[in-house]
Length: 136
Image (cartoon, rainbow, N blue to C red; front, side, top):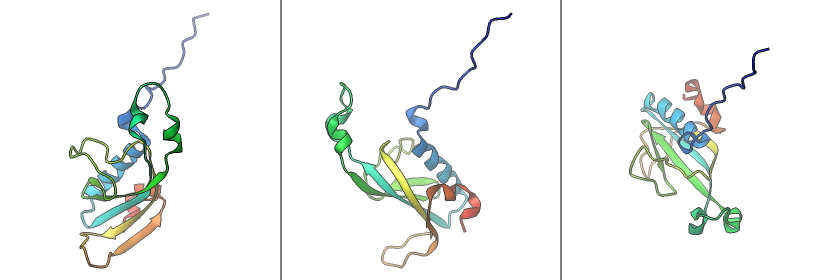
């Protein structure tokens, strides 16, 4: 009997392919095709104290950190947080790993400060807007 071989498993996801980052990449791709739309995402970010990234294991203070509200807009293929600082480099994630996206809505673009927002769809689950047909 020939020796059994174990199935080849894919490499585990890296930080660059974290679920939130993948989701944003897909939404950015759709938004490039819709320059007349802005997608606004709302959710929470778990604030981590500075010592949470140090070596030595899980920091108990990190688990007790409160969630902060966050908002992100995607326009013409680019994401920008309106509530948290983002890196200048567009290849860097717009949101930290501790982000949980909760809802999304489509607005008429461009947004103009002081004018009423043209809400076109939503709010609804973020996954709903992964379908280009959901962008009116």
